[in-house]
Length: 203
Figure (cartoon, helix red, strand yellow):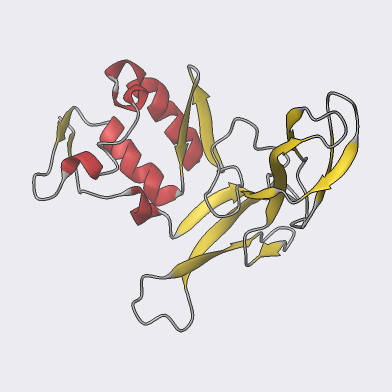
């Protein structure tokens, strides 16, 4: 009988290196966590993206901006809302068109910053730093089964393949990675299917 005892690991324990798909060449690449220079507490960090195939590299997340707001048209006096497409720079003013009379005028908008999207990330799980699709992910009955890296995969494999799963009471169990796994990963009916996916990932 295979046994698994929760080691009270969190998702953050596996985030030192997150394997992702390069937005330039679609090859396997990595987002690596680095401690910030000059930090004395040792808990401040950033992340660097680097592809070893095409040498594309990012040291800071790339953001795009959305200008939006509510306005009263100075021509027909109707109220309307506006929202821009993704913009490369933060605009101080944004020219919006009234949907009632097509009158255009400039407004000082509110700004929403969003991470630049990869060209292939629609519907996929992405990393939190650069919004790049994870390399290890697979759709399973309408759900996405995913992992950050090999260490994460090994931990999931031990859990999914276990006949007996034991909790560890030394820490708040409800906040551990295992406790927060989606239901479809925990269900016995999906065990064989998920282990086959893991086996392909490991090869």
